[in-house]
Image (cartoon, rainbow, N blue to C red):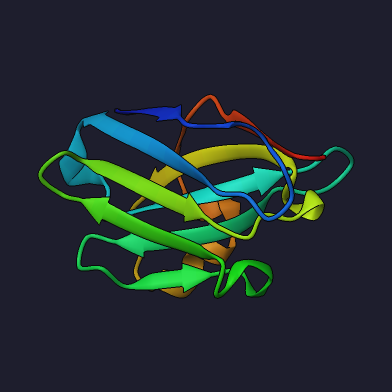
Length: 125
């Protein structure tokens, strides 16, 4: 089992920044990738960004150039730096982890076995 604990959500004005953190613990040998997904009311859960242990990344087109995913393997922690936030970025953000063969798999939430409890991000003036 892998436990994921997220932090860093909140309310921010359009154009502002937030950084999300996700600390993993437990059977780390059972995963090789972590990522962030989001789900807005009435919408399906979607990939925001994923990263493998070796540092390969995958971003949703809607966040490319604005969001950056990174990881600290020594701390088993993944970060999502979100800049130039827009109202359409408002959603519940979930940290997830899984064992994948290609980074492209992370496009699908079903690729991740373990999920955090979620943290809310609201972008509003």
